[in-house]
Structures are given as structure tokens and as C-alpha cells.
Length: 285
Image (cartoon, rainbow, N blue to C red; front, side, top):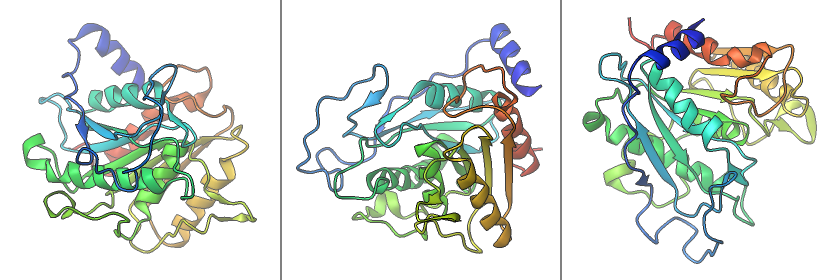
């Protein structure tokens, strides 16, 4: 399996290139909507919390295997905090191992009072996608092969980014936001909050699949009782709109496993993602 091959390779070859220094998404003191917000100091243990200065960190794939494809990684955490390792940096290392550049997104949490749970995080995700495309030449990546991968709340954020019409709820900067903020593909892993609370047979009204929605790869476990129906509904709506989509619902497993080693087959989702990326042409020839 791809994953076991990669683990063996990691033990016998030098480490991947070190990630670059974090880049702030917004000018200092000018985070949209947060100008007067006061949060406790940011913490990182056991999870990253109280994020008021969102950043992105570029993890370049090794030059010899770099496909030019880049994926923005959005950790989960219920829009309250961020699981920054097993749903963040560990995922970036995996993507690098298959020749994919990664961008770890530290978006704002907790969600801002009086606003939709994803309001500030979506601003950060849209800004990050545009910023990645703007840096394509310097980073030696392909601006038309930029995806977003997210877990749980981050999976919901990935869905919101892929179903956006491209409009933004912040004052744009022509030097950064001239490029599209819609990803070329999305990878929601056990995505949360997709099901309409008032109608279990429908997607949440905030999610609008159209004939222009980019491709998606979805993974979830049957035992993820709270969110598995939402993932199935997302696939059905993608199918009905004739959009490219692959869904894996594994028979066993729960929620929040990320890149952890687990006994259930759902733990092989990175292998299946690599297969899908290859089939879609994102891993080169």
C-alpha cells in the first residue's frame, strides 16, 4: 500500500524540506471584523486555540517529485480550536511524500459571536487560496491545481470554500485577491455540519452545489453517526449536479482519526486519496 511504502521510505531517506516560516494572512491589526476583538493569548497545548492572527505555512514537496499540485490543509476542532498535528502538520508531511505541496492554514477560532460559525474561517480560507495562487511563480507550483483538504469543521470549511461563488465578505486587496478564491478541488474528511438540522434528508441551506462546483473526494466512517448522513447527502447532490465526486464510507470507525494509526480500514484513507489524485491527473504522469 502507498502509505506503508511511504512510512518505509521515511525511515530510510532524509526528511522532506522544512516548512517555510508562517505568513500572516492579513496586515497587522487589520484582520477583518476583529479590529476591536480581545481574546486570551493563543495556546498550542493540547490544541491550538484563541487564534486571532491567522497564518499559512508552506510545506514544499521535494523538488525531484514535486507535481506542482498544492493543497491547503484546514485542521478540525469544532470551530473552537484546531487539531494542528494529526489533522495538520502530519497531513502536510504525507502530502509532501506523494509529491504534493501543502499549505497549513491556521484559521481563526473560536467562531466569532453573532456571526455564522464559518464566517471568519471562510475569510481566512479564501484569502489563503488566493495568496497561494499569487505565489505560484515563486513557489514553483501550478495555480490551476490548488485544492483544499479539511477535517470535521475543517471539512465543512472545505465544502464552504468549494461551493462559494467567489464573492468575499471582506475588503479585497488587488495585490493578493485578484486571483480566484475557489479551490480547483476539495477533500472533506469526515466533514461536519453538512446536514440541514430541520430536514435530515437535505444538505444545509448554506451549501449550494452548482454545475460549476469543483471535484471532491470524501471519506467518512459508518460509525461517525453524527455526520455520516451529511457526507452521503453531499455526494448525492454532487451526483445530481453531474459533478465529479468520489465517496468512501467505511464500515467501521469513528470521528477525528486524522493521520493517526488506527486498526480500522478507514485509516487507509490517505492511500485512497493518493489514488484519486493520481486518477484526476494531479500527481502528474
